Length: 384
Image (cartoon, rainbow, N blue to C red; front, side):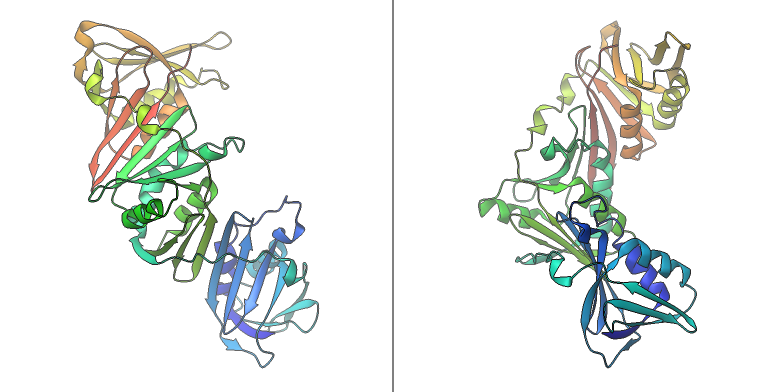
């Protein structure tokens, strides 16, 4: 196996696949990267659930022909970073070590296992559809923060996609049971999702949180994703990269039941996002690091407060315009300050709506329609 690759291409390829491997796995081979030369250079990492392949051109395809090997990823990445200014790197695998040469500088990297031990990457046997990468990643970015990181709640450790009826957009949803985020937008996947459901799959497609984060990370600089979707797999392909993920099998909660009816809100406000974030940050200086509890008082205004028996107390107003004032009533609710701040940031708007139906109800935060995308967040109350 012989070939030459530009050092910058090697660095970018290893960066592209850096999040996909599994260092702490019981399978040591997953800590490596598969390098395959067959006219171009293919770099692949996987953790069995998520696989990423980066493809880069070769400056020279040697007489040694095509071949592949498994290399220790972290070591190869360190070497690539040291050689990134060297221009062309010559690669050769004469035995059980990969030789990397940049002029007089040479490395020999011992292979990290047999190619036969490396898991095969499944192919998604389905028709493809091209989607707008920017719009798709924007929708993921609007909800990803709310997905669960608790691996025992595997069905919540995901971003959910549910297409509406013909002519209706897709709901992109994430929740961890304490908060929920939803983006509603035409993604380009509507027909594929409906066909998948018609073939017997669950109407809600669950992309693992790690895969959704990887799609978001890789979308920078990508115009179009080519997507293939089957009952158990999904792949996203663009110039130089392919992401393949196993879909989560499990029932997703009925998220529609969690979202309060906007017309039932006793209190509703138009809030300046910067003011709400600033007030949350201000009072959080004395709040409990564990609970991050904040008391929200609603009447003709919004006021935030917190008490900490060890440090003291703090309160701050929020710049808001009243839409519905609860007919002169006053209610107090408790929320996790970080959850509120995460929701406001993800909505990405200078002004957000804040509404509450009653003292036991969640708070609903919404952003104005932006480029056809509707965004909202729901945060459950907590006991103060």
